[in-house]
Length: 221
Image (tube, rainbow, N blue to C red; front, side, top):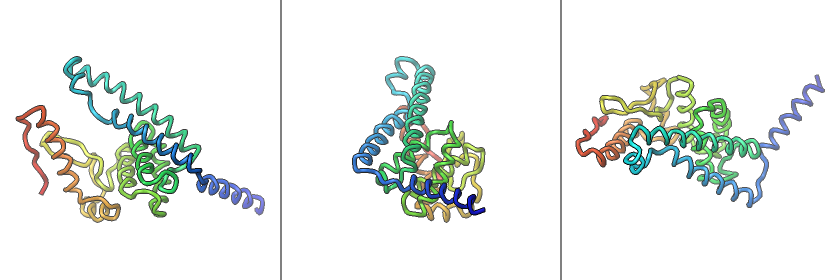
């Protein structure tokens, strides 16, 4: 019994030491720069085909080629981020600052092909939010992302989709729509209606630029 307890204690101490590993200033700066460079590529992949490609290749071919590039970037970033995580653990404010921690989250957010990894980061992030070492609204977005990827209803309504009635809705739906804004406020998120209207306004302005007849959204009130 004592031997078993000693082994468990040793394992806990090892994990604790790994999680609390202090980084040198150079390591921190290198990590921050690396995350920033990965996010630059991430945002290219998260965008849309260029207008030039649409004109030269046609919309369908442009999207087909862009999807191949997008998948390649996300998978390359995934390999890099997992390697970083295995070496340094969860990257919170203490290791890479607020922007670096946000960049780390953003990259993980787009690894929908590896939900298991997203879930692992989510568990770590929950603890770090309590320690004020991670951004609570980033956590909310990742929680909803994991739920949607698992075919479950959302808690905060951060993952949205555009439907034919010209409105944006939370994907799959909400676990408790009555109290959603109360939960959102706890994680520093604006009321759900405001976020949905903001998405619809952005979608309208993007489409209006290319189609003057694009109808104005049916905003929530």
